Image 1 (tube, rainbow, N blue to C red):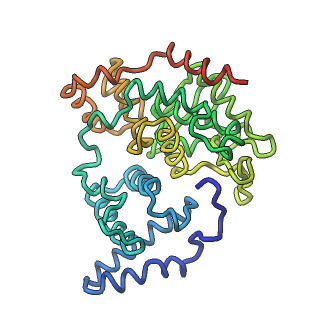
Image 2: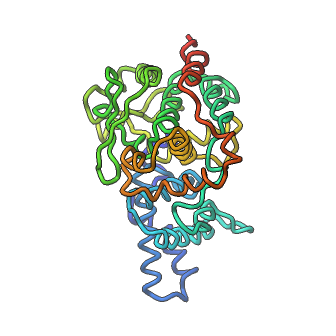
Length: 353
């Protein structure tokens, strides 16, 4: 997804969007009320305009990574109610089955349409186990399960991928915060990163020494010609072009091409699959694991509310219920100590030439 150019099979005109939507509305919605058809059209146009903005080609519009990112967009950016989100996703599911017929009518939307609330009851599968975290951190820097083509350029973006996963797993950043991070927000000397919530509420995190070193190593792997510039709004995490073997440049923005939400989600899924963690994990599992670990370390819900810039402590309630009700599972979910994290980084990342 990082390599797809603007143009080509992207949705670049209103006419092309109408060609995708109108056959569905005329065939599948012919017996629905005019107001319903109008709402369907609006929901579909909004989705495809978002895809165009994110640089998502038609062939990947209904992929699990795209659906996951759009769900987060509706929740976190648009801040729609769960009923509105389910209504929109239901329309998109119908359209996806129209353009990509499936005998079993199974789509990536199903997991979200089955939820009663956005903040659903947590289960052990929503978190990474301690042994899975260790395995993930050890596998990412290595060559396991990589193709020859991937190995050719892996040294350019290995630390980038590690840095993203560290920021989400050990500092609680969201996918949107990762993709929105700029050079002006990152201070290598102090290790302080400035973040803004969806309501633009500021918060800061302070990196531990080894994580600061990891981010700086990534930064130095970006070739000077396309490297994000100090104290600018250049995106900190840039998109890599696997065909050309270098980081991409946006001539429109006169800056490195930013890593989109969808690309971040896709990268995380790929690294987790490579580590043998299964297809069910995504960026949300990293964030969930961070919140759980903070609570297990003794943080209070009110403290986490301020730290993560939540409006209330309600998003944390499902985590505290899990801790109270699933005590037998907690032994497999203990936080990784700072010393163990440092040991893994030194052995598997910093010791490499």
